[in-house]
Length: 97
Image (cartoon, rainbow, N blue to C red; front, side, top):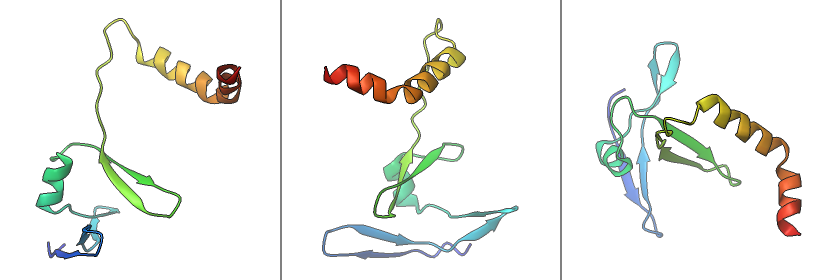
């Protein structure tokens, strides 16, 4: 990757960044411009998520790491979320009553 960045402002005062896709081992990768990395508050080793909306646009967000209390086991919390997803319709029905 050559590190070239093109930035342009459009009418809505939105910054656009353009980067070339490069090879990273057997995968493809994109580097973040320094100003965008600072804005996202990310550094090497941090995790980001890509969120696609209904319009096909992709939003980048830093994954927030949370620390569970010592008395909560991750597998119990994961099981809770699995049940919640399966029964979401039932729970919404109960909420609306």
